[in-house]
Amino acid sequence: MRALIAAVFAVVGPALADPPPAMADTIYVAVAANFTDAANGIAAAFAAASGHEAALSFGATGQLYTQITQNAPFEVFLAADDERPTLSVEQGYGVAGSVFTYATGQLVLYSAEPGVMIGPDTLEAGAFDQIAIANPETAPYGAAAVEAMKALGVYDALRSKIVQGQSIGQAYQFVETGNAEVGFVALGQVSQTEAGARWIVPQDLYAPIRQDAVLLKAGEANPAAVAFVEFLKGDEAAAIIETYGYAER
View 1 (cartoon, rainbow, N blue to C red):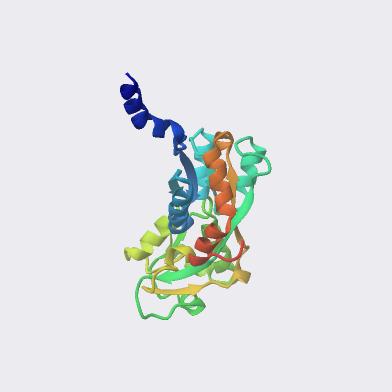
View 2: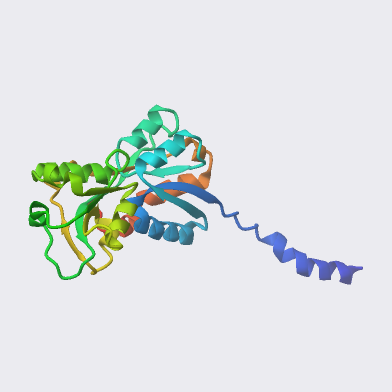
């Protein structure tokens, strides 16, 4: 009998001596489309650091906010503006005191054609059939594109050539596939490639694209969601954000 007890303890004892590993959780994050590549990098770094998985859903900020108000199960919201995260708190969807700026976006005029010169003269000449922008009603980068064109005095001349994507991601696809010769996209979408041609639009031509995040009420009681928000504020996330061409927070 003693031998049997000893044998059982030899197998079970080590398992009892060490506490079981913490369970990994999945959190659901709504992310503005311009931040797709950077968010994927941050999610991977967060998983490596915490063991938790961030399931990311991408889209135009306005569309994502509409989904949040319709009880979509998002726990964290990374917007492309500073309006809707604050509005989410005011309307009872976000946690008070959790709003912060995680990135400042930069607007780019982009062409997928390599070796071409692109800049304000491109807009003034208007020697193209279509120019892509994100929907300015739902996507802050689209609103910034309209503002920049108006500041340059070319909006009225180009208005009939504008094609709108539902998000900045779709506007980028219009240019990449040749459906539009040029388009206004986010620097974060093209910062990791030398392909094509781009002009970084001076930031005095449009209001700063301050991108805010907020912990949503659905994630308030989830330690993994809270941990993701804290990770997003940290140095490791900041380094990834900078790599993708976003200005200082």
